[in-house]
Image (cartoon, rainbow, N blue to C red):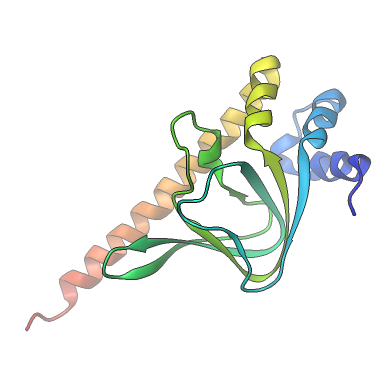
Length: 162
């Protein structure tokens, strides 16, 4: 099992947190938990309550959403050091907007969202680093989603109609 020192050491190695000092890393490690998933195991389901922001340390996690009449549609495959569940840090979203399933054995660090928000409010330097990183994640996911959307439009435009 990970100790507080293990979390601090692990967080220190994640590029997301390079700008943070030892005190900030200790405060983050105090709200961190380890999550281990076997292949096929569900991390969370669409509609679940938002409670953690996850950083994937090892493995692979597929994000998918339910499309009426189409079933589960995969839209992103998270890999090492990807962030999962970023919307848990927004003030409006109250439930998961997608499902996350391990496609291989995976190891993640979970940061309790409400406690992370409190840390960001208490330490604006920490909050600035975290929110700047989250903005990059959101922008990256929007770009990925846009590319998938354009591919879908392109495929449907080239399919023959009956």
